[in-house]
Length: 294
Image (cartoon, rainbow, N blue to C red; front, side):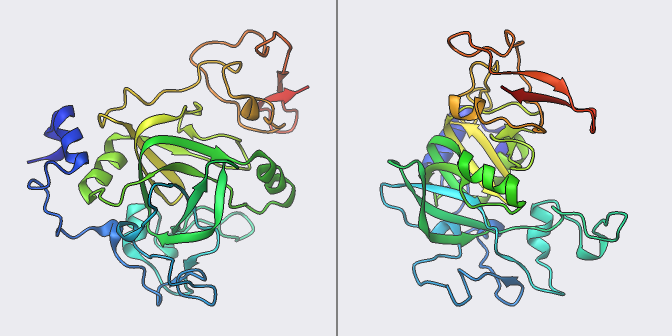
């Protein structure tokens, strides 16, 4: 049976484990394949800072009742002369020999696969707990899902040009997620992105800022794929106007950020009390439309 032929209620049952007889638990899972230390350089999994408490497979992650914080690993990478063919295929990356270069001959960024860091989430601070509990190919979460961007860390990134480790997707750990469920999320779900150099919130590929949701998410490489609790896109929603954005996002839009797309036009960039937040202008250098905060 094709997973995409299931009815919503059947997919829901699949997610709860009530239909395990359809997809055997012993079935090989490419997303849970152990990370080869001969191919990957991972300081926190195989290096000097490795800990026995750090798991290398998402199905082995244990978080108890705590929600987890899933983010892109900023330190791990393929070793020189080595390639993880499975990761490159899954994350749609070219072979090393086929990577593109700029006019100066320098490799263009974003052409290599990445690993995923998993932390426990601190509900009080709204940030990750420093210690990793996983360095994996990806992370699976369910339930109440939030998208966290530390705006102060983002400012530091803009200043230094180096990414910081305070941005990710948060939800209840879901190690029972199957390979076919992940495939469903990647093929039929809503893909989300975040680039600290160009935006201060998670968006879909059209630039719409996503709202927190109740559902399922798979985070891998530089993408997060989401569906609602019924394995549908219906419960994945977006902010309709600039005014409706959370204050921490709205007030931290910077010059040069990509403009967000909204379903309805904003009423002059005003806030909840009617005070103007800024205005749209054309950047004289790039000729791109930008939102300039007052």
